[in-house]
Amino acid sequence: MSSWMPLTTHAEASGTPGTVLTLGPTGVAGRLAVQNARGLGAGRIIGAGRGSEALRDVRDLGAETVELSGDPQADAAALASRLGGSAPALVLDFLWGTAAEAAFGALSQMPGANAVDYVEIGSVIGEGATVPASLLRSRPFRLSGSGIGSFDMRDYVRRGRDYLQLVADKRVTLDVRTFPLDRVEDAWANATDPRTVLTAT
Image (cartoon, helix red, strand yellow):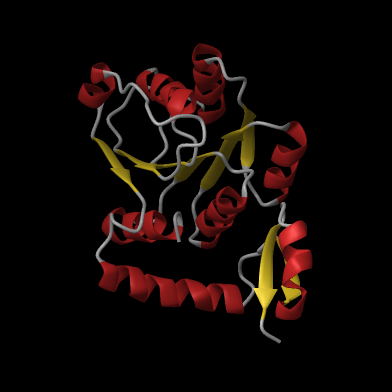
């Protein structure tokens, strides 16, 4: 839901995004974000994160990838190069911190006035990020967050029902490992990636 809400909200307000940039696509929520963007018909999906093997898996889901180094200037250049000079319509940021600053740097290098909807979802790298004033003046730029407190709960429930149907229809792939409830101790001992789920049957 952390990516489904901003994706569907954006699509309803502005149409299907041409390009979606996901910062942090290698975790469970990030991989779902790539699949969600693809399922909604995004023209192009770019995932930027760390770990060449994990990023290879993200490419298998249909995204182009950028491997981040942790150096905001180098990462800004790499992102700008991958984007090809055209700003994404939507950014889904699970990382924040220096990764966000790299994205801001990349966006600052791009001419044009197309609107960018930048959604902060997680803060794996850090709680703070500096937003350049020049970026805010250069184009329509909307910075918001995706969390349980940032949406009308009636809308959240409605879209949640739709998303559960996507999962039931196997239109998104969840990387999980299941344990029956009577093996809860085993599940607890093995609670690493992929995500562990307990089943009642």
